[in-house]
Image (tube, rainbow over all chains, first blue to last red; front, top):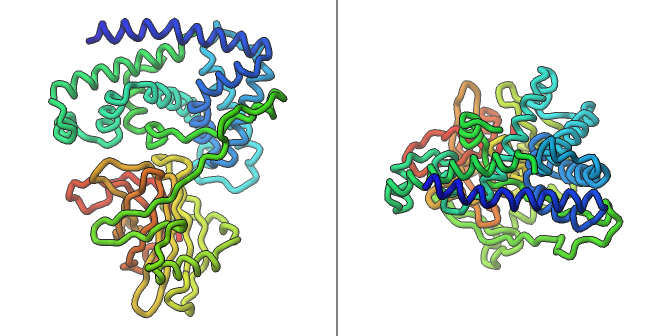
Amino acid sequence: MGLSIKSRAAARDPERHHADRRIAAGLAAGEPAALEALYAETSRACFSVVVGIVRDRGHAEDVQQQVYAEVWRRAAQFDPQRGSLLTWVLTIARSRALDHLRRRADQPMEADTLAAFAGGAEERGYDDLVQRALVGEALAQLPDGERDLLRMRFWDGLSQTEIADATGIPLGTVKSRMTAGLARLKQTLDAMEATP
Amino acid sequence: MIDDRDLHRHLEEGGADLWDPPTPPPLDLAAITGEAPAPYDLTPVRRHSLASRLRGRILVPSFGLVAGGMACVALGLGLGAVVFSGEAPAPTVPVADVPTPAASTPLDPTAARTTPQQRVVLRHLDASPAQAVAVATVFSGPDGSTVDVTADGLPPLRSGRFYELWALGTKGRMVSIGTFTVDGQGHAQASMSLPVSLKKFPVLDVSVERPDGDPTHSGKSLLRAPV
């Protein structure tokens, strides 16, 4: 099972990296279609980061637009040696969302946001938010069966035995699918963060 | 590279946004590049469906599909709309041990029973999607108080699981007000009896609960607001 997953993941990585290169080249050439393709690939994770920081959907939508406007303007500056397109977009998203928060510093803010600013802990917290968005994006790319089992285990808090009872899937199969799902998740994350 | 410990931490503590990330807005390509906008539908339509029932409490149908026979419910909702339409949210009200944003209108003890007495907007906490929100409208009168809840953006739950509305007091005291589920669009409307005074239990909270026979709060709060 492990070898099978590794071989499939390895087969996907070149495609992902090839797509990254193609989009990056299109952006650098000023092709709007490349921006559309990038948005299709990265907007979900980007919006998760922005919403997580800004904590207001209306403001987050404005910031999201600013992020991709900046991506468009700075396309030529993207350095594939420093990371993937996704991590580059998320880095910009984090910065623009924090800028937005700072601009609104004189307005009422949620207590935990204020505490984060006051304690200087926001940098670590927001880095963690970017990492969580990557995990969420990797989860979204898992096959439904594996993702559902992981959701039941980690979000619903069911034991593997309870999952087997609830789904009618044999316990051994639950265990093996969960192991496979976690391995695939890890490999997807590694591929996301890898340079193209 | 993320290590296994961080991966497990995110899976366990990532909250609902991890499993059901908020839907990003459409790209405004024209504003960024000057090109024509993408040829896809930019106006998704939310379809409000009839709510379900749970634990013997009948949930109120959504605004768009109110049945003709439910005149009293329609009257209540209509009055609510008249009273509250156009009202700006009140400023955030700090609560000693429950830091949450909220907006509410003041209680009017002289109003009739069918007149909405108070409107509380429950905002999302970290564990819920950012777009999740619920509005609790309190009705009060000589026969007791009721609360109508309209929720949107909550994740649909697996069979058997449900959302529960709580009134939280001080020192960890809390009272369950009622339960509800959401439709496939994350929408619900429910009407519940209010068993306690919100002056003594001044925070409303929505939790997600498992059908485990445990009547206590699961600890998984998704929405909350002080009254």
